[in-house]
Image 1 (cartoon, helix red, strand yellow):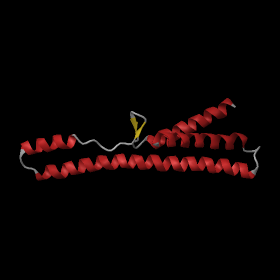
Image 2 (cartoon, rainbow, N blue to C red):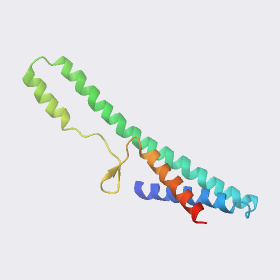
Image 3 (cartoon, rainbow, N blue to C red):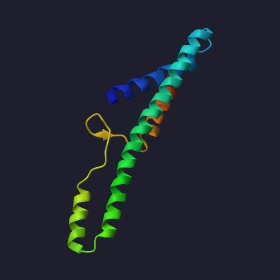
Image 4 (spheres, one colour):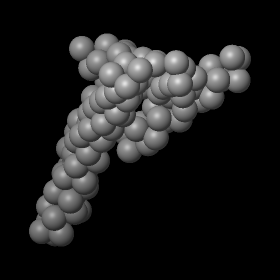
Length: 127
């Protein structure tokens, strides 16, 4: 569901902003307002969703490293430390997957906006 939502947000951004830039003078005010709202809605929704998913990934990474450091400070025996380190390395950070392989990290919002801008510029250059 996340993948389809992100895909639809990308389409809303590209179509809304491209239509407004290329055909803005041909539309009346209500039609232009529709494309403005569509583009802004796509940008805000995409930014909110991808930032929230990236913060989830970063928070789980920080929690994993913080807990491991706190526990290792309290252990004195090297055999206990080795066991605890192996135990904490077995934990994986929480990842929100897009498709089967890719997941959302800190740079995903920037990559998605870069893709949107590149598509809009390409469409404007074709016209």
